[in-house]
Amino acid sequence: MIALRVLLGMFMSGIFPGLTYLISTWYTRKEQQLRFAFLLCGEVIVLATGNIVNYGLNHLNGRCGLEGWRWMFLVQGTITSFIGLVTYIWMVDFPESSQHSLYFLTPEESELAVRRINHDRKDGNAPEPFSLRAIAVHFSDPKLYAFSALFFLLNIVSTALSYFLPIILQNGMGFSQNRSILLSAPPYYYAIIPVVVTSFVGDHLRLRGPVITFNGICLIVGFCMLAFPSQVAVRYTGTFLATGSYVSNWAALNAYQANNITGHWKRVTVAAAVSACNGLGGIAGSYIVRSQEAPTYRTAVWISIGSHILMIAIVVTCSLSFWRANQRQRKGKGLIEGVEGFRYTY
Image 1: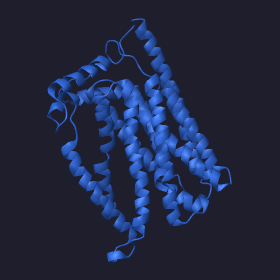
Image 2: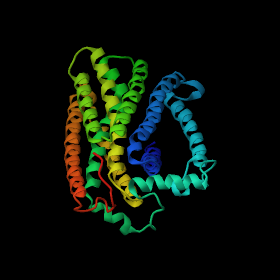
Image 3: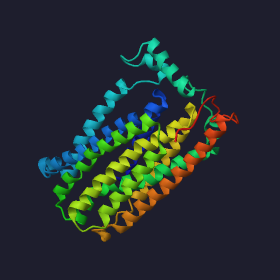
Image 4: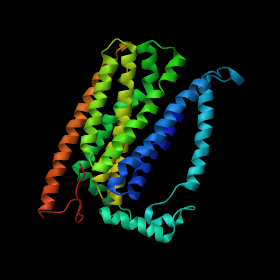
């Protein structure tokens, strides 16, 4: 099982950064957050529905000599494998090569897509040939480390909630095992609303930092509701607020980093660094929910609150730096990202 889990992690590790990178190559900066939100909507719908499906599959315990958890692996693994095969055929290419994708764009439409990106940030054409220098040079940019830290901090919370919410509902709020599985789904369905609304506002107003800060504050409030009151209804409501906030910040942080870098190899490098630190955050998040601290789980609560206070501080610092760089660019005192007319979005 450990070997299979390692293999699963290896194959999963490139999916989300790869999808966010692909989306960022297709859409202008003012269009990206809502598209990231749609990606997240699909993910949380699958996650929430998976909990309900697991509830049903758990009732197959003993059928055909298989435990309930084996049914979960078989059914969901089969569905995933089928979708993977279909996706391999259907997945579109990058804009400059999209005319070769299956039943997608004509060459003229592909050229239009490239022109839109070049008008926005001038990196719509095919990248320069791969070299280690093309990758290594970007590790000198402080933004890479700031974005990586933000995703590390966010995934501490997202891992703790997504994996341990049923346990929190069962041991922390007194629900039965099956009811806990069912009740862990509604917060994710609810998360679709705030992620779409905040992303629409962020794109429409071209705001990133304030949206991330707002979501962070909402998450802190949600964890306070989860930890400190004694009423189960209030605590369960807190899971809605916390879940909606961290899902919303996935889209907001992806837009924040994608809006403020240019060039294919820089996007690839940042995506890889962010993915690595995101995974480290997941490892950390898996240790903060401690069963002996039920029903309040104070360690998880205080680490989650502290991580988002630090996240807000990093975003404020970066945004102030972006604002100063934009002011210098307006005065003709230098280029941003080496691109004429490019300005940061904060």
